[in-house]
Each structure stands twice: as C-alpha cells, then as structure tokens.
Amino acid sequence: MATTNIIIHRRFQSKSHTRQYVMGGFFVLVGLLIYILFASQVAPTAMTRFIMTPGGIDRGVMGDWLFPTQTALFILMGISLLAGIYQIARGFAGWTNAVLGLVVAGFVFCFLAWSASGKQLNLAGMLSSAVLLSVPIVLAAFSGVISERSGVVNIAIEGMMLMGAMVGALVGSVTKSSWLGLFAAILSAMLLAWLHGILSIKYRINQIVSGTVINIFSTGMTSFLSQKFMQPYEFLNAPPMFTRIPIPVLADIPLVGPLFFNTNLFVYAMFIFLIILQVSYFKTKWGLRMRAVGEHPKAADTLGINVLKTRYVAVLLSGAMAGFAGAFYTLASVGRFDEEMTAGKGFIGLAAMIFGNWTPIGATGAGFLFGFADSMASKVSLIGSNIPPQFMAMLPYIATMIVLAGVVGKGQMPAADGEPYEKG
Image (cartoon, rainbow, N blue to C red; front, side, top):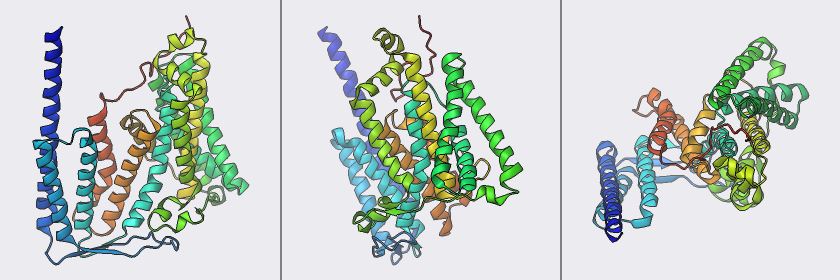
C-alpha cells in the first residue's frame, strides 16, 4: 500500500513539474513573440492613442490614453519573460492559471498597441462592442446549460434563436411594440423546444438528430417567410427597438459606466440571468433535482423525482432563453431581420458552455472571450491593420476551435447528458 502511494505521489509530482515547465516555456515564448512580432516592428518614437469613451456616449466620459508604443511593448515583454523564468524556477502554484490569463491579456494589449501605432483606436468602443457581441453567445450558452444539466443535448439553439429573431421582428413590426415582439420571440422558440422535447424525451429519438432537424426547419422557414413577406413589405420588418437605459450614478463612472450601466435591457438581463441560474442550480433544491436528473436519472427517479417532467421543464426553459437571445438581434441590435443573421452564434454558445464547464459563471466568461475576439477582429480591420481582413474575420471562429481543442475531454459534462431515459 505504501509503495502504491509513493508511485502515485511521484506520478503526480511528475505531471505537476511537466506543467510547470510547459507553462513557463509558454510565458517565455509569449515574451519573445512580443519582441519579434511587435516591439521590433515599431519606431522608437511611435505613439499609440486609445480613445477611452465609446462613440455617442456623453456620460462616463474619460480622456484619451496616449503612450509610447515601443516602451509599453518592452515593459509587457519583460513581464512575460520574468513570469516565465519564475514559473520554470519555482512555479506560481495555484496562481498559474491567473498568470496565464494576464500573460495572454498582455499579448492581446501588445497586438492592439502595435496595430494602432501612429494611429488611434477607440478601445472603449471596442470593449462596448465586445459586451454587446457577447450577449447572444452568453444567452445561448445559458440555454445549453439549462438543457444539458438535465441530460438533454440541445444543438437546436441556433434554430431557436433564428426563429425568435424573425418572429420578434415580425410581431414587433405589426404591433409596434418591442415588448410584444420579445414575448412572441420567446414563445416561438419555446414551441420548437417543445417539439425537441417530444422527439427526444417522449419518443427517445437521437437528440443530435432532433436538434439538427429543428435547425434545418428554422433556417428554411425563416428564409422563406423573409423572402416572401418581410423583404417585399418593409413595414413587416421595422420593429421598434429597446434603447439604452442609463442607471443613475453608475452610468457616470468613467469607462465602466458606459460599458455596463448605460446599455440596453438585454445586457442587464444577461447579468440577472447569470445570478439566477448560478444560485438556482447550486444553492437550491430545484437546482439539485435538475442536476440529479442529468447525472443519474435512475437514482433521481428512485428518490421520487419525475425525470421526464423535469427534462421537459428544462428544455422549455432552454428554448425560452434561446428565443430571448434571438430577439436581441432584431429588437436591440440590428433592428430588422435578415436571413441566417444569427451566423452560428448558437453553436459558439455551445462551445462557450463547454469551455465554461457547464456552469453559468464559466459560460459567461467564455462568452465574453468570444465576444471580445469578434469585436477586436472588426475594430482592428477598420484601422487598417497589416493583417488581412479575411483572417481577422476568422478570429472568433479560430478562438472557438482552439478552445474546443484544448478543453473537450477535460470538462465535466453531466454523466447522463444525451442519454434518453425510460422509466423501468
């Protein structure tokens, strides 16, 4: 027994040391890349200007940030190199992941400073755009968490979002009410979720197949209705939109105020849903029952939990969240419906859910990561970067693939996720 413990301990130490050296090497590599790609490519006298107030905002105004580009790059390069040397020599122990995040953030900052060298970049506008671009991704991730925590895979989120976007625009345009449009969007997505529940829970059809069918149906139906009615008759595609709602006092905080406290209903709702879901799933009996159904449905059934009913409720709530996410496009962002306007954000939301380890907090962080990648790609392209715009447009999807390649297999998905349950 003692020999076995010694062997296990040595293996653990070996893995720990390997990770210590690998992460240290990565930090050093990032420092070298900062010099090779950025610092050596700018003139010593070059300056970078970051605008720190989003366009069109008159509250929470902050002065521009002007700094010498090369100096900033050398400082961040030095920090990354020192972090790598310390990691190799002694290690940051439990702080390694935090240091990794800071090093990566420093590399991104260097890229932005290099891209805007001799020019100006509205950094606050980019961050504000990142928050808005994150909203449908985070909400889609929440939709996935709700469904999969109960053991039902829902890849139909994309189709539900698309249907919600179209119905929200149509009903909002006809009734001239953004609230009625939002309600109709949620209801339409819940109808598709009910269909997904019938197919996958009652008839135990493969959940991936069921979700794919719904996605195909939604794409075809929304495209047909758009071409047949909403494009020829513009009055059917001009819904009223939810506008900014500044929160007193908080909206006047420089930088933070315009990003989080002077925005629209959907951003506020996203944070409210985050709190509700995190507390509900991990601090209440309801959440415990939901998770029990997704982890071990037979045991939950033995304890008196109605597994099938619980899964139906979860799938319907998942649909409601997806419909809410889809309504964001037509009622708070674009202001009209265009064919396939969700552009795969439902699938990126599922990637965020996996990256976030099937938790609301983790999914939110991952959603912000993807939203930031999307925003950075568009903003850097606008200031005339040397990087081809086609590559910048690929950035959010490249980030998605990198995350999935590094995370799939390491997360802890619900044990019964995707497995139909038949009461014995």
